[in-house]
Length: 392
Image (tube, rainbow, N blue to C red):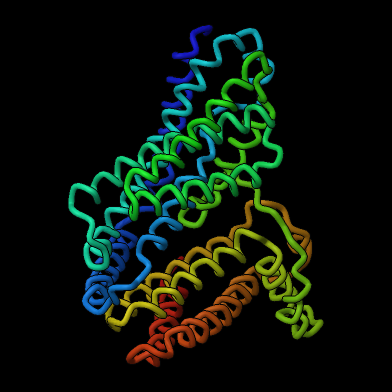
């Protein structure tokens, strides 16, 4: 296959299939219900806040900072694989057409979020600025062009520098993007000056690419890390067989299992606690879901919505950690010893009850300024216990 259009088409078809295979487990029925409640409650809170927002609120700077940062992070999606640095070498002269398609997909796939976020901010701009409807919607076009230039600039910079000092490149582009949006919102055409600066920067980098070899190693490493991040995210909702989790010591959490007495019947308890503390996938799953529940409880002032969200987070935490800790697909040394299998199940249940209690306390403390905050820990503990008992 020596046609780079066909190579990209095959890669893209496989990539979309892989993403859709796991995303159907992410956006399940109960997650969709939670999202509806979160969006509804967030929209209500936003509309109520707009009624009391001060006229001198720095909306332009807030929007410029948030959107500017989002459009700057434009990590290229190349879909390159490890063997490509060998098998695509004879076709290196044709890689330009391949990378053109890669940059186009990177642009369109990353454009939605900043655009939607700006559209959400339009009511705020109408409240605190004197921008007309035409001027506000012209900012959308400006953001699209800015994103296009950032995608090109990051790709060209990575191509030229092989990924070295990418943080410095991003800092420069973040500053230019923020100033561009803020200037366009306040002074109209003056924002185009920063757009020209970024365009010239991209043009200069593009000229430096001429006659340089393709940095296969950097783009392949980037692609592998990107897909691994997606698999880790999907692994919170379903099992990803080829995902390899990392292990960290976390000595500061040794207190969790140092209190376990040195007895035969506590063998599984020690192993389960240690597994949770040291395994990134398990530990960060609990941390992320707890943080999400805490943030929702902190900012949403509608008790019923808060209870639904924290209940969903408690259900997801308990269910996923139970499946993860009870799985025994690999060989463990404890299988060689005459320890009843039931003890592992008991140890997992004990750990999950402890984690549910800690989660309930943290979420309650984050919501202490909200009405009826004292019901939140009851909801978390009840849902966690029911999930623990009803799940297989």
